[in-house]
Structures are given as C-alpha cells and as structure tokens.
Image (cartoon, rainbow, N blue to C red; front, side, top):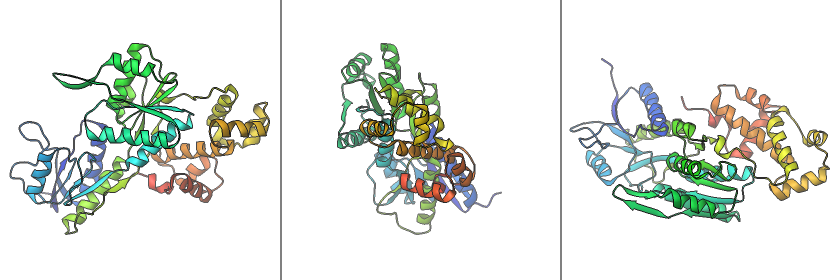
Length: 380
C-alpha cells in the first residue's frame, strides 16, 4: 500500500484542454509529494463537490458557484482556486492567468498583422468573458483604435443565445478587415461557423482570435482558430505549491499569483497581413520567411527595389516600428515557439533564431517579454 502524506481533492472540470492540462500538472506534483488525489468528485446532480464524509487535507478547485465555495469553507480545509469567475475569498488562495497580459498578447498579435479595426464577440452571461472583452476594448481604444462589442443577445427556453443573422448583420456593419477577439474557443468557433454560413471570408474579411486554447475546438474549426495558449502546467504546479504551504499552516495570500500566458498559437483564422501597400506586404512576408537566417535591412534592399529611407518611412507609418525591429520581433516570436514546443537547449534556440550568443538572446528576450527564456520551460 502506498504511504500517502496528504489527501487532496481536485475540483476541476476536465472537459477541455485547459482543465485536463492543469489536472495533469497537479498529478505530477502529487506524485512527487505522495499526495492521494480525488479527481473531479461529483454529487448526485453531476456538480463538482467534495465526496460525502470525505476527510481530506486540502483542495485545488475551480470556484464557480457559491454552493461549492460554502461546502469547501464548511470542510475547513485549505483551498486554492485556479479560476477567475468568483470574487476572491480571504480564506482561499488563488493562482490564475494574468488577464492583462493575455489581452495585451492578443492585441499585439492583431497589431503585428497591422489590423486597425477591432471587435469583441462574447455572447455569454458569465462574468469572465465580459471582463476579458471589456479589457480588450479598453486596450484597443487606449491605443487609439476603433473597437466595439456584440451585445444583441436573444433568449429562448434554453437560455441566452446569439442569433446568427444578427451576428452576420453586425459583422457586415463593421469596417473591414475586422479583427475579432473572443474570450474562449466556444464563441470563437461559433463566430467562425456563422461567418462560414453567411459567406463572410475568414481571415480576409474577419480575423478571429480566441483568448484561450482548446486543442480540439480550435483545430477542428473551419478554419482552425488562432488562440492564446495559457501556461496550464505552471498554474497547476504553482497551485499545488501554494496549497502545500497552506496545508503546513501558512495563511492564504491576500493577492492572487498571476501566471502569464505562454504565447499566441497562430492558425488560419488570423493568417493575413492587413497591409494595403503591396510592397510592404511582400517585405513582411520575406522577413517572416528569413528572419532567423540572420538577415538585416541591407538583405531586404537586395531583394526589393526600394530605398532604405522609403522603407523605413513606410514601416513607421504602417506598422509603427522599423524594419530592424520587425526582424527582431519575428526572431523572438519564433524563439518563444521553440522554447514551448521543443526540448532544445536555450543555446540551440538562440542559434536557430539568428542570435550570435545565448547572452545576446537572453537580453533581447527579457527586454521583449519581461521574462527569462527559461521561464517558458514547462514545470516538471
């Protein structure tokens, strides 16, 4: 018989990639710490709840309703919440995604493709999609761009829903091309389906980005949907580390621990450069194809018959950055992908992305993202 040190309940929905990945990270931590896990226990109505008469030591939970919170409080055990839906209770620790970084990342992805017209599609009545949509609109408007939200919800016996015809009318009433942020994959896929039915072309007329990643929903959508990838491994690991401290007598921190997302996974739904200037569009495609080969601005000028001064002026006018800055940004984005997707040493990532040394790469990466390259490696 295994000699378990603690018994921990994991009240997390596992119907999507996010939940499964967080639970997987919790399981890894539990194995090292000799915890016995009770995963996704439910009551007779199918709701996540502590098992009847269960006497455990703590819980990692998605606190999404008051009855769940009350049952956990009644159990008088340390609890760490990994969701953002409910207001933080003083007795609960919290480890959650940093929504401000999530929104900034989504907005920057659209801006890197030169979009200037933005919208949010969040046909839910839950609080968290509305918060993300409001944040996105604030970021876009603060940057001086047009941004609106879809709010024409209908109601039937099943609840609130977005009428496809009203959604299509709303899309057609907006400037084109339009960059649309959806808070999670469900409305993102719903919008993609409506556009497909109504003959609205993605991404030429409407580009769609989900603020969360579900591998299945995002990849099977037509077309596949770009999404912000959250650091589920770190959320699960940090939640367990916090719970460990709380089970050893430490109080719940007053403020949540915020975990930045990993990156934007670019799929077909945003695969477009919203650049009217054909010459600059060609240059951007050249940069994206060759940035990691160590190219510089003179290499661009050898391929395209344009003066350096004109190129610099056009880049500043259209993108708000220089060609050199775009080359470096592209290299760093590729480096970010390699750090997440591969086990290559950081020195190899630096070389593959055109940096002369690990020191130069680490300095540039930290300046660009505010974190070290090693921070993107999964928690093990």
